[in-house]
Amino acid sequence: MRNNLQFYINGAWVQPKSTAVIDVINPADEGVVGQVALGDASDVDDAVSAARKAFETYSRTSIEERISLFDRIIAAYDKRVSDLALA
Image 1: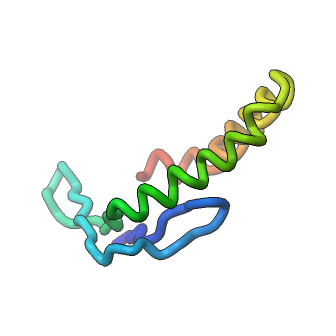
Image 2: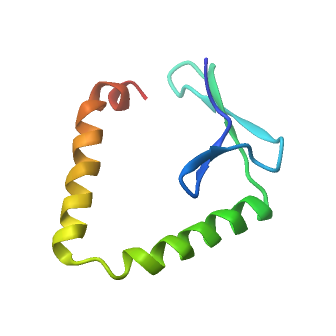
Image 3: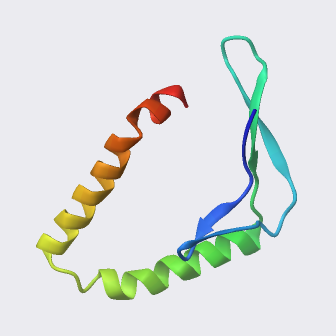
């Protein structure tokens, strides 16, 4: 079973404020294949605050810098394409 019980906020994996989780169900056999953490309003506030802070810098990047960033993101996905297919 695969569990994803943390959130990636402000460049780090953090514990959610809430302890609530939800089961991830395999639609083929309706079995539980994992759990995902559920956030609360304070988790959303933390994520939005981090995004606003990041945008201050990101909004000043050039088109070339943004293209380079997306190329690196695509390369990271390409390295894990088999993991994504399994998920």
